[in-house]
Image (cartoon, rainbow, N blue to C red; front, side, top):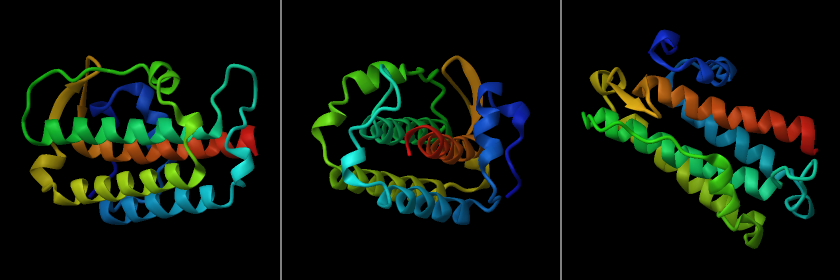
Length: 169
C-alpha cells in the first residue's frame, strides 16, 4: 500500500503523516502499538501529573487525549469505509481534556486503555480491503479518506510522543 495521497487529506494533517516512516499498513500498526507503549513504560508514575507549563495538559491528560483522538479517528474511518455519507463532526480537544477526569486515573489504567484502543484500531484497519481504504468522506468539514486516516492516527500519536520528549521529560 502506498503512502497516503496528501491531496486527499486536509493540509493540517500533513505534518502527522510526514512523521510516519512505515508504509505497510499492518506493520504500521504494530509499530504504532509498540513505540508509544514502550515509551510510556519508561515515564515514571510520579511524572504523570506533571504539566510543562501553567495551563498545559498533564501527561495523564495528553495520554487521554491520544486515546480519545484515536477513537474518533477510527470512528471516522469506520463510517467512511461503510459508505456512510454523513458529514462527521470535528471535536474540541481542549473541551474533551477538560472533561476527561484523566487526573483521577492511574498510569496503569491509562496505559491499559491505550493498549486496548490501539489493538482495536489495528484490527479495524486490518479488516478493510483496498476499496474501503480508498473510500472518501467528510470529517470536520473537509474531505478525507480511510488510508489517510490510518496515517493521521499514527502520526498524531508520534506528534504527541515528540511533545512529551521535548517538553515534559
